[in-house]
Length: 417
Image (cartoon, one colour):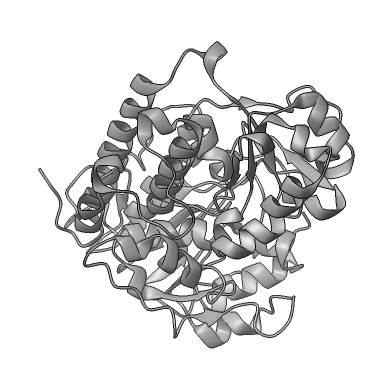
């Protein structure tokens, strides 16, 4: 990525300012501030030296005088804060869900098409959490009326923090390095790391990727909500332990064909995905130790395949990525009905047994991941985890993988001992 040679000066928001990752005004992939590069190798660093409670300095945050603090994360480097950001923007609901999980959802002021993303997630998942009230009616759509994301919307939203990888606007918005540096300088910094899936060469020089919970821990430092992070981590470990105890041996697990939501069963066109791929997009599949039915199978561009290849593979379960974003009848009309009506498709084990399921959204933080893990567990192992009740339905309490009230309590700061 090309450098921007303009001179960098502190942001006009004096309480949030960039550290070492800004070089000559340009945000360079792979460049990190402070001692973050040492953290990648597991070395102890000065940034990771202090520890305190949620009310004080967070673990992994360095104090810089008075009430200021700093948090380091590749590729942003070290970002200094003189106060906790109150207004923040997230590109999608991955990092957005992290903020909501930490109880700062009311500070979300901008995201990509909130009426199509967060509003849907609120209907599907957040509504099941007692006492968690979220209103996305006033959240700005950073995509505005077109397909492009103009930097002017960031001036209009006027946030204190842009919770996204600083290289993301270059890759997804077609900005220049100079545009990113300008918005960082004049509005607020970018803080995040693209971890939905593996990054390609468009992201510049290689830099560290984090797991969902590693990134979530960084975000908890920024918002000084470490106790909520710790509570989520404990719950996540308990859920994963329950899953691990219930999973059958690998040889006895059903094979799953994960199909992109852009698949068109009515015309016999499918796009196979790798559910074992890195990134939070596929976290629930990896955590449930699924067997990828298409492992080693030759497909076309973007995983394109057809009924004949599906018949050769003959998966026991077929899951459609993003299926959770459909209403029940619409999902059945788009994906299930055409397969039940096709002569070749009816020969498939998954079709004969009607194991055709909606998959999760690719964008998930800790709360959405709990719901989507439960959903997949019930689709894959109904005897162990209960029958999947269907889109828009809440499982019976005794068949829930996690306690909704406990999650709501964490979000609201009422944390169980």
